[in-house]
Length: 589
Image (cartoon, rainbow, N blue to C red):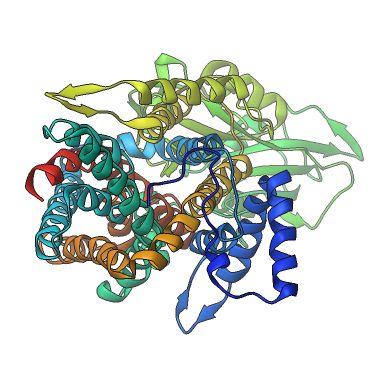
């Protein structure tokens, strides 16, 4: 049976089953609803899929993405016709958001360490080709069905196009060419559902079992290694013993000036500033030349150890005093002044005047979204962001020399990101021909590349291109779940109908095509490439199979972006390697 044309309704699988009158009324009602508003089917699949995905069976949990796919297949049996453009939009949003989040980290990861990902993509492609060719010869499948097995079992839709073009060049009669091309679509429709679902099971559940490790645990470990010991606090978290403190003391002995008091802390390797002085119940302006008197109440601010040490020489510590409150701020500042770039922290501090440093503390340094320890030997690089702590006026004065203050915002820069997705989709239209074989990144690969580039660009400038984490998460999660639900709604009915007509043989062969290359790649990755982090391993494996639903589930398990860099590398390669399988299957099957 040829695939459905756009807008064409296939015979309903449920029509082949005897339904009681009540069930027929229910099916007709749902069919009329989905005909009037097919988008209802999409959101119903998401709701049902995520609900089913929450249930655990021992240590196994289906997850929202796989659940949405199965729910969509179920709903599709009623009959749903929905525009394919929605699927393209959802996938573009998902893959662009993934690229944008991981762009800085991706470009930092390129180098010799990428050899593992290149080999992983090659192993998946070669083992996939061999598996399909062997199955085709053993089970006497024609070239069209063999190519359909490859396209669906390996979830690489581009194989349909490259295989169809190769079939046209076989010199067959027009009717035979049309029949084989229809078989490509049939093989794809029957095997694509498990191709997506099976990849999730293999890349998430089986891989964790094979390695004896958990994606979440390894993702946390890898993130901690990236942080190099820098502690990162989540939303609502703060240290019980903060590094920067403010404490109030009553001066015991007169004689020292404010500048001398602060200098004594500096001489002992600390930094402390006097921020408030109260003398005889009246506030006194803080000035370096001001001599402190016995009984003065002063507020010292600085690193905890330095404040405690200096306070012991000042006098009695007070729990509080009226009028001694000072507003302190933290501001992220993009380091754009060339006089600070490509220099060590120690070199920069030594070159700054005491007046410039007074009352300002560098409490954090971020590079490409990753915290960097502020050590004397740490080099300050273009794109770095420093967090300054101090009074508003002191921080503002320092920022004027360092660079622009990054103003927190919950607004998304739609100009920047609209341009990014546009550029990505345009890149996806580009076609490079190797002989008669068209090679293209496609809309997904183009959007991923644009996301990586625009994410890296944003990390270098910081003054534009904002996308709050919540917005990025919504694009990623809704885009992926909606995309796989669309796949189920569009292909589920045809797949079930074909299986009912032709039996389970073709479906089971697709299961083999899905599992065998992934299993070979897992063993290769574990024993030859020796991946020691299952989160990185899973990202690489899912990308090598261009298994976007599996990658989404991996991200959910990881809870951070650690799997993204290896996925981005193997995914880009897989779009080329797997696309080339179309004409190779036609040639060898």
